[in-house]
Length: 313
Image (cartoon, rainbow, N blue to C red; front, side, top):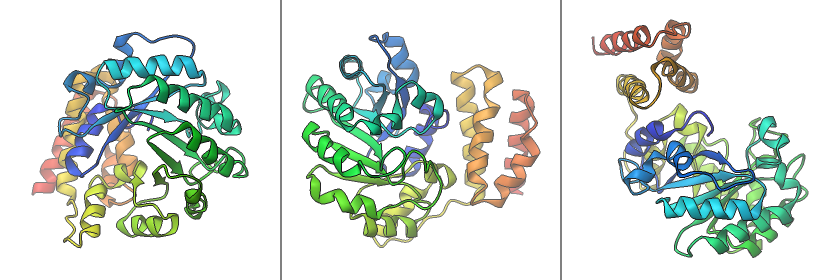
């Protein structure tokens, strides 16, 4: 998720949930091989064997439309330590789509297939290459064609966000369309979209026919969601995070941002996270109202500390 889940957030979320892997924000590739510093900036985990502090593998996500250039950059990422390569064909942002990236490529399934095949051919066979797609661009009429083309390209997995680009993030997610194409390929398919709870996860798995799920916004709204889903699957008692622990995570996230970025930018990501959290936590909505206009990092940090102390009272 561009601009939200950076390495500091990945460290927090993978510590809370039993994720098999996580993915970086996308690295935009245009017409050249990018320098090593660019890879390290978007994926600092490369300096620690390509895993988070919780030893969760990190796949480096690439976005672009040139098969050969993407393949060269994928190989560089692997040489630097990436545990896998994820190819983004799902981003619905207008700025990305105008430059022939993300979901705009769903209009040309052959090009999507060429990109995946080229990257798969260049990257060592033991390194996973995954593709993230949607049901289509304006509609889903090319979805079956896309899956057949991906089947020939042979990625390790295909993640499907069960909406078109035009549908964006508007409910519902059409999980049944994933089930429609499972017979077209033996490649594992990962379902994504509108999974906010353990009940959603079970329904998504049942309707899509997938036993693998990808969480995105749901993991920001409920940081422990991955763990809750696994506990539900294993018939274990669910361990819901109390707000006090989430408030502590907010402060930890803010402080981690301060260690890696210019201090003046540190309040914004925390505010973004609060916007997600308030969907499930009324305390997040109240805290957001208290801090939304604070720009000074010191004042912002003090506000978080005061709030955390008040939850312990």
